[in-house]
Length: 283
Length: 190
Image (cartoon, rainbow over the protein chains, first blue to last red):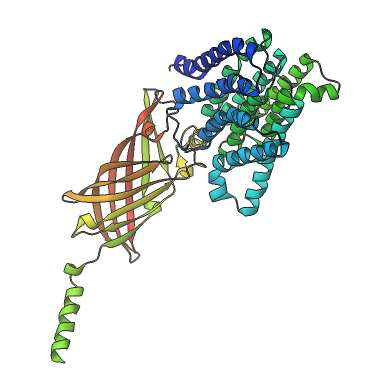
């Protein structure tokens, strides 16, 4: 069994694509600090890394997408462009409407079989409000409480969450979605270079949106289409919140040190993986 | 008046003969129909599975086979390889993605007789949400009355498909791309 091929397509290629973008972005950041520059060079590489992994591992993406995973990949690509669109509007209400429309679209397309065949109208409304509300809450919280991803601990926390979610997805019955999550983690890796060498983006909304769509989107798909438990899904939401918005919120609770936040994130993800190991019957 | 009566008699005779025979409609008997697949595993063995829930209909015109029609649907959730863990994985997003794509189906477009009780069937197959045209041969096994007063007909079709043609690409290699399919069906005349 060839294990090198999935490793190259699912890890090395996304990492190289993201690294190329980051190296290209570092001199550009010196001259321009506009939101679209951050969105394009800091968010898009991660989304493109995910796309390249899917193309390598599973073949071409249908347009329009024909399953939930493909919709997640497409929406992760759209997310940085949404930040650029958003930068044209000054009013916050417009940004919120765009945010709700974006995540409403993601919910509608990714969970279409449930909307069409499984849920009645009331169930659809309840699930829709819960999922779209959760997505919007995290995005707005990341925008207001998050900070420019200026500390390596921010990236390390996100990597822990993506890695833990990848393991949980594999254990819950979807190796492909686990591989995809691993690919997003690999594409996020080169961002450590950015945070270590000081070329830090001022606006992290682009990458936050990509990570929310990729991580939370895949976890939701894992819950509805595979066997990922609701407890793990809630834990992953908490992990995403801590990694993207936790820097300030944890200062509020007196746990502001990066090491403590990283340990909390790691602990949550370990608990999720342990729970999924138990659920799947491996322990 | 006599002429009218004669016309009615002639029409009655014609309508009761095979010259005016209608195509017969059969409903798939799920209990006596089998959708079986076999696939190479790691290059060393063959894994065999089946789908337990199927439905469909067959319109059969023995005089004009080209007027016949086949319309079968298989519920992907019913995949059964005699191993619960493997079945759960097969139902998941890596393979059949049963919640996303609850059914696989086949609808014939043309049926041609190729010999005694053998037919070439062409039509559209849908697996994993992807539709493709395909052709295969069907052997009619027999037909006749059953002990409960009904009338039955059955046949068998064997063909190969490539799962990657339908976007089911996970682990192609360790789990083969080519899948052997056998569909043994029995229909009850409606």
